[in-house]
Amino acid sequence: MKKCPYCAEAIQDDAQTCPLCKMNLAANVYATQRPVAPQPGLGGNSYATAPTQTSGKATASLISGIAAYVIAPFIGAIAAVVLGHLGLSEIKKSAGRLKGDGLAIAGLVLGYLQIAGLPVILIIAAIAIPNLIRAKMAANEASAVGSLRTITTGEIAYASACPKIGFAYALAELGPNGSACPEGKNEIDGTLATGLKNGYRFAPSAANFSGQAPETGFGWNADPISPSAGTRHFFVDQTGVIRSTTAAQASADSPMLH
Image 1 (tube, rainbow, N blue to C red):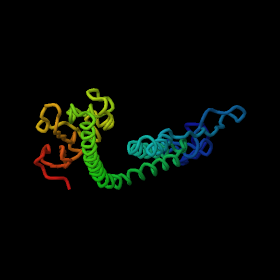
Image 2 (cartoon, rainbow, N blue to C red):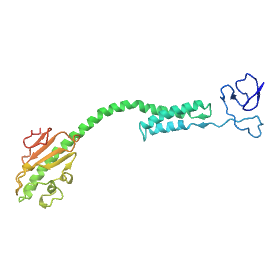
Image 3 (cartoon, helix red, strand yellow):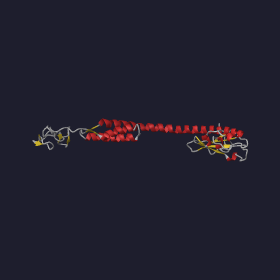
Image 4 (cartoon, rainbow, N blue to C red):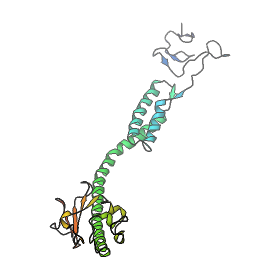
């Protein structure tokens, strides 16, 4: 007979586990229970079961998995997977002192689901983004053509209302704040009057203005402010014909818009 080194209970010499405190004498870890301090009224050799706790890593894994779908896509998924595996390992090594394997598994599932869906999302983005850019560029170009038509109409109305000035050299004179000839203002909206609208810059073509009063001709260019705003450059003069080119700034010699 020998004594258990943990609770002093007399046990067989070849015993692997103490029948009283349940200590695994061979592995030096708990078999099913963790001995704690003797409990009053239970005797000097009586031991109670230690309370189990939830693994913090398992809890963090579930929280990260939820966050991956709410506030931190992909980053939260990676954290959920890492913490989930760490939590399961921690629970397994605790020999029953820790619980929460269900939380860790739930976090792993949420994390892996989002990570598995990443290639699909990237493929969709690779297809959708270029199409969205092209659609936006087409919309900007159509808006620029419409704005040039509006400018043409505004110039004709301005010259009719202000015969001593003729056509306006500045878009601001056609807008709400025109001052040179109040009778000719409000022919275009305030945004277009600034010279910038929907990704295009509108500027007068100096070669088409004589600088004499009354002005008998005009020319306006519409150019994209960046390559992503549009690929075509437009031009219109007093003839009302809109011309376009992709090589450089359009002019009266550029091909007609079809």
